[in-house]
Length: 190
Image 1 (cartoon, rainbow, N blue to C red):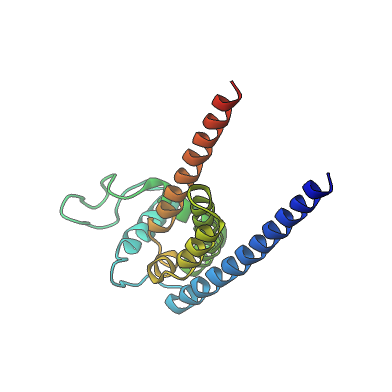
Image 2 (cartoon, rainbow, N blue to C red):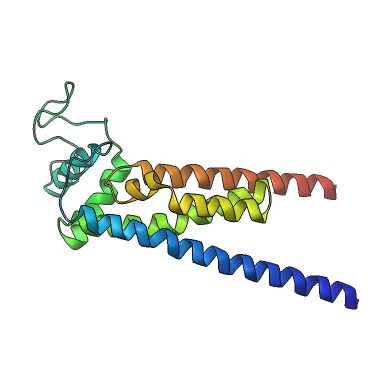
């Protein structure tokens, strides 16, 4: 009984230490994402690899103006002005529209919200996936790499879908792993 109690205590200390490392990694993840958000600022810019933010910003403004998912001007070869479009994610457009509806047309607010969400969710989910499929150490290293990967930092400050896509993929890996674990444990009980 005493040996079991000691093992439980050691497991809790390890878990507490892991928790502290994860909190540190998340704080480290949020800070450069916020810095990048403020660096890009409150305007829509044409940075390499993120030109879609021009399209998403325009679509969100069209939705706010009551014109639906239409483009304001001839856009790309296939989309004429005023025509409905399915070329861009409507979910992300509605996310932008919601933020703009609450805070006004301030891309910096979107950048800050995304930076905080990505700074928390990306390393947390990367940890969960690494820990689930390998072990705690791999989970922490994966979380640290996700926290400092420059493209994740850059994309989280850009008004593009990639950040939420990456978070969704990590979440799916975590959910599938959890489902497999539950299926294994239910089969071992029978």
